[in-house]
Image 1 (tube, helix red, strand yellow):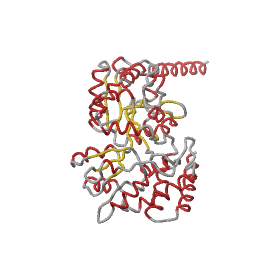
Image 2 (cartoon, helix red, strand yellow; image 1 turned 180 degrees about the vertical axis):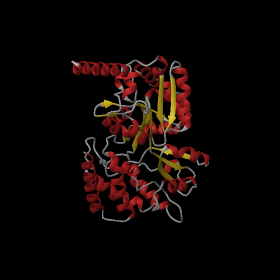
Image 3 (cartoon, helix red, strand yellow; image 1 turned 90 degrees about the horizontal axis):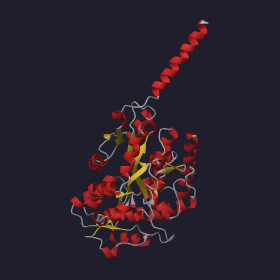
Amino acid sequence: MKRLLSLFLCICLLLTLAACGEKALEPEEANRLVIWHDKEDAVIQALQTYLEKAVPDLEIQFEKKTSLTDSLKLVGNDPSAAPDLFLFAHDKIGVFAEMGILAPVEPLLEKGALDNYLPMTVEAATYKDTLYQLPLYFETLLFMYNRRYMQDEEVPATTDALLTYMEANTGRGRYGFVEQHSTAYYSAAWIHGFGGSIIDESGVPFPDAQAVKDALSYHAKFVALMPGETEYNTVNTLFLEGKADATIGGPWMVPSAREAEIDLGIAPMPVVDATGKALAPYSGVQGVHVLQFAAQQKTEAVKKLLSALTAPDIGIELALASGCAPANGVCYDDNRVAEDEMVQAMRTTAEIAIPMPNIPEMDVMWTVVGNLLTDVNLSGKDIAQSFDAALAQAEDLIAAMK
């Protein structure tokens, strides 16, 4: 009898604790949303100002995290330590989705909310056919040139024309064109231009081996006319000091170029003569991700926030505040956005840009491709042998992740 009584009391205690765990949040807590981010002040200030007016009944706290992904890996499953949402690039979606900490975003959106979004941004936000991010804006690499040295009519439309220009304008401490030629993020554009890819959506590395080897072989002609140093600071300094006529760089270079009083031109990516395909850079889509706890316990607040963020107004504000290229296509109809050469250039590049792979396996490919480029471009090793070694390394590392 005592055993039965003890068992009964234990069951009652467990049920009581479970009921407490499922207890609805107090209104004040239910309307408070914490958002982690790693963004520049101008972006967060624009968001904060807009949301204070758009959703005045919500208390939204933005918290900057320098190691956001590492922090989420540690506390993403702990509602007491994790944020409700986070603002970050799309390329870690697969990692966090597999951890089980992300909530699908589509059920939290109004029907048709993404109808006007650029297809590339929605593709980037999707993992295994599920939307895990609300895209806000995106970034791509751009072909930029200094009009003091490269006139508008001289801008190469093809890669062969670019090579010819480099041959005629490189020497005595000056360069016709520079880029971070031996980093995976930059070389991806050349690989895509040959129809290849670093990894496919199912996690297979270098699915078209010949395309990658062809790209490496062709790109080596350009690398020979650039500095051996491939760091960002070197490339950036050469262009800003007027020692390089053109470069491929991100929008983050534009403010510095304008401060240096460079007459900056931005042009479409050159087309690879051999394939008829343009150099297609990776794109990084920045957006809001929702954690499971917030989706379940703060559903209405999250829905209000996401609804406000799908309005074109915030995309326009971000474009004006920080030169962000909005994910919502309606934003580009605004005259002020239409007049921003950099934003419009990224909008054009979005038609060919390829979202960075968001699968977990991509994490190892950055290192693999970086090593491959170092071997080929900086050490002068045989392309075929270096590629075979890189492929074997990639397959081993991916297998170890299973």
